[in-house]
Image (cartoon, rainbow, N blue to C red):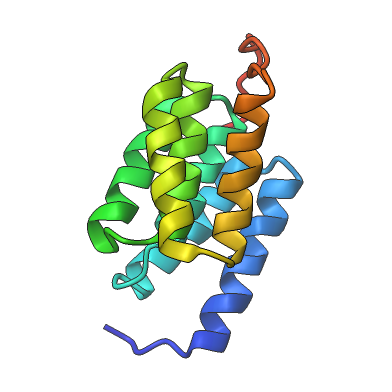
Length: 139
């Protein structure tokens, strides 16, 4: 395997997120899949792959990517936060609440904890995920 510098991985991930923002899901998925091969010891590209699926309302597929990320890094508050979000959008409120709480406990004052807390607050305040659309986006 070719060693990859952290800065190069960051640039690659940013390119993938740009594709994701432009709803170019196929391209985003290809970039993130490549990053996951080049950096197999980090959960970040796997979470990004889940985010591509999540953006297309493919929650089952997103959950599978987040589960893979958690196998790489079981105590990742980053992966747990996104996993909790997908669980909630899948209709698994109790399980989502548990996972989001775990993410907060692992991260305390970090960005992942803030994201998880925002999701928990939304759940507590009665937010319901929008009904799934028939439009799934380009693959």
